[in-house]
Image (cartoon, rainbow, N blue to C red):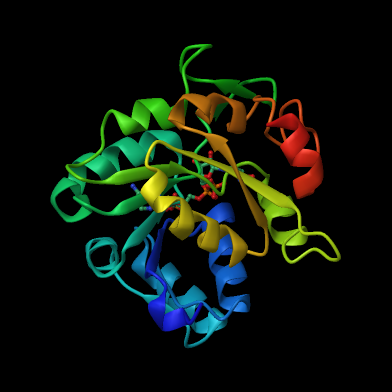
Length: 218
Ligand SMILES: NC(=O)c1ccc[n+]([C@@H]2O[C@H](COP(=O)([O-])OP(=O)(O)OC[C@H]3O[C@@H](n4cnc5c(N)ncnc54)[C@H](OP(=O)(O)O)[C@@H]3O)[C@@H](O)[C@H]2O)c1
């Protein structure tokens, strides 16, 4: 597919995940709009990534793009969905979040109910007409960087969405990150691809998998 015919992408939040996703997309020659609440951070990083990366403030980035990757912590996603409700209407929203927070033992605890998922909770907060995909969060940031563009067989990133009409856009986004997309199902499967789930690197999966290994597990 020509880059010009692909939907435009904005990454909101340039921490561990946002930076790796932007870097992977630029490696695939895919343009990316980058935004963070710290505008000078977005400008500095965009300079490093080169002309394919365009820094903007958050509102302008959301306005300009078709696909909005909310690469922020679970609690911040809720704030962004409320704050930018008008701009986000009708957009494709990608949620990589894991509903966890650091505990006092140096680990992480789930901060929502045992049987709840971030994907399903965020789906209930969607602006009008927006479509949600849970994606880009099934590996830790290190693997998302180090296993990208793996040869001979690419590593898998699982995704989930209730809106099959966006499968193609999400699969292209994942391929342009250097991974093979595997759909886990609808958002009711989010819990499986979030941290501690059976299809997450920091869950029962324990490592990256290839497509043939992944299909046995889905
Ligand atoms: N790290 C991982 O290995 C990993 C793996 C899978 C999924 N995830 C998920 O991916 C998401 C991002 O994780 P991360 O590790 O990349 O976090 P992070 O390193 O803390 O980065 C978050 C970034 O978002 C910015 N930010 C925070 N609140 C914001 C807001 N309201 N508006 C705009 N920008 C905001 C932060 O800015 P400041 O620097 O100013 O705070 C920071 O640049 C989380 O939901 C996490 O659960 C992470």
